[in-house]
Every structure is written in structure tokens, then in C-alpha cells.
Length: 211
Ligand SMILES: C[S@@+](CC[C@H](N)C(=O)[O-])C[C@H]1O[C@@H](n2cnc3c(N)ncnc32)[C@H](O)[C@@H]1O
Image 1 (tube, helix red, strand yellow):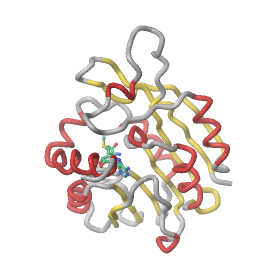
Image 2 (cartoon, helix red, strand yellow; image 1 turned 180 degrees about the vertical axis):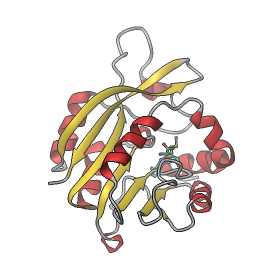
Image 3 (cartoon, protein in one colour; image 1 turned 120 degrees about the vertical axis):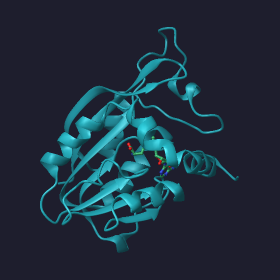
Image 4 (cartoon, rainbow, N blue to C red; image 1 turned 90 degrees about the horizontal axis):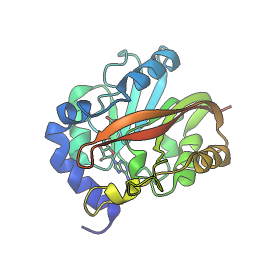
């Protein structure tokens, strides 16, 4: 094990088999993602989902939609391939650029994974570079407003040995703007239930456009 990406890979490799039922039961953003996809996905468009896990958010898109999912966990990618055999699933750290050879994407999802992003500005810039003109993005970053109200900071409540990150709304907006993306909507929403510490983690959930 060499660093944070290795630690998170090992954690999710072990978790892949029981991810879907376990995570579904504590995850609140699924309907918001489904609503976004319903509005953003058009016939034959190209969808990129980073930190896709087993691909459950995009696996049921119409067969003519070209889905590319990326993750650091080979076991998660194997589960994603099994769920959508016609999809493309690739090992890629979300801190790294999306290879230009993959082409440009019309719809981009970064939800349920930016908990592990240590540089939101760089990651959003990488996603912006992967967008086709007019692309639509849904991005969810943990926004922890509870610091100073008696609870520890979210990043202190993370998985053992794994760095987790949250961003205040101003930092999120600065990262969006620096990436050259246009904010369309912003909501502060319940994202998932932190079972160990019994509180609901919330996202700054952004719909963005690449002009
Ligand atoms: C909680 S799961 C969510 C999966 C999916 N986004 C969803 O919402 O159903 C988090 C996923 O992020 C992936 N992940 C964590 N750190 C990553 C990184 N640095 N680069 C790419 N994927 C990462 C994990 O391997 C895992 O599959």
C-alpha cells in the first residue's frame, strides 16, 4: 500500500460485493441524480461517470447512450461491467486528467466520490477539459457547515487511513469558476447517512454547464 489512492482502492475492492444494498440504504442522492439524467441525457449522447463504483447510477440508461465509468477499484469496475456490458469502464484516479483519446462527453457525473478529492479545483478543471461544448454536469461535494457547532469536522470522521474532504460553498464556487464551468443550480442537500457517527452528510450539489 503506497498512498491514499491505494488505501481507498483496497477498501472499495473489499466492499464491492456488498456495496449496492448497503450503500443504497444510506444514500439519499439517487433520486436527484436520476432526475438530472432524465433531463440531461439525450439519444446517443456520451456520459462520463467518475468514481462510478458498481455503476448503479448510470447502468440503466438507454442502450444507445455511451457510458464511460472510471474508478480506482478494479472490483468496483468489474461489478459495473457486469451490470452494463456495453459500457466502458476504466481505472482512473479522479485527480488525474481524463485521457483526450476517450473523446469528449455530453454529460458528466461526479457524485458519491468527491469525498475522496483532495483538490476540487484541479478535478473540476480535468472534468471541464473532458466536456463537449454545451455539456451538462452534476457535481456533489461534501459541504460541512457543522464545524463550530459541537461536532467534529467531516474529514475527521472518515474511513481509517483514508483522507476524506469537504469544501465550503465559497470554495466550491471558486473551483467551478476556475474550471471555466457555469453554475446552473446549486442546492445544499442530504447526501448519505454516516452510520458510525449517526448524522447525515450533506452535499453542495451543483448542476453546471460547459459553454
Ligand atoms: C461511495 S462509492 C460511490 C460510487 C458511485 N459514485 C455511487 O454514488 O453509487 C465511492 C467510489 O469512489 C471511488 N473512489 C474513491 N477515491 C477515488 C479516486 N481517487 N479516484 C477514483 N475513484 C475513487 C471508490 O473506489 C468507490 O467506488
